[in-house]
Figure 1: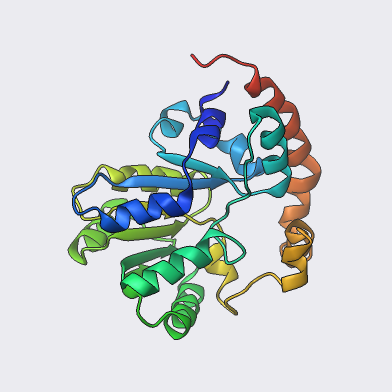
Figure 2 (figure 1 turned 45 degrees about the vertical axis):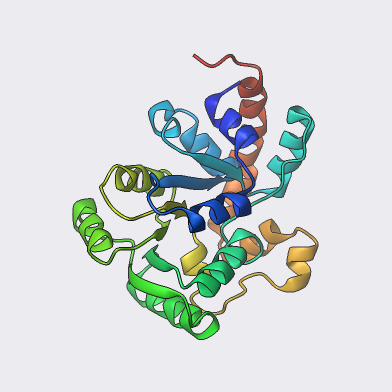
Length: 240
């Protein structure tokens, strides 16, 4: 089995993982990422990068159902958005007044998103945030370290966000967990809940995004079928 699939299969309950970090004082930073069929294709050949990811979750309902069959255990769709884990994370961050640093999206969008977070979750200690078009990783690392962030949420697109997270993990800091979030910070710039409730309940998020983000259609037509062919090979390929 490919190492990326093995990490999806073995990743722990994400809420329990967060709860453990809340109680811990001095722990090594963890990199937690979420892959859909498109980002799976981008990461599967980055064996060096995948090896440094601590937990990997599948954020597409189609791949979650496929993995549930082949792994012979329930694999839930878990995504860093308000239809899934992001809601739980923000609620716990608010309840525990966690120090969180956000990175991603455009300058005006990240500012709007932070205003929405502050309105809905006023107890979160947002120690810093910035857009995703920075020039120097090291400069961002320094800002994160200086503000003593405990949690970092970065939406830089795959594989850049995973590369950034792994580099940050190696820094000497107080960061406990680093989450990748894809387009979440961009999606939340106008409203807290990006998906209408009935769209979420019917698992039609993919269809909603086709109309909102036209590039998603290309992924559905080209990359998603490719994923299902490739993942079958990866399921039965022995890891090197």
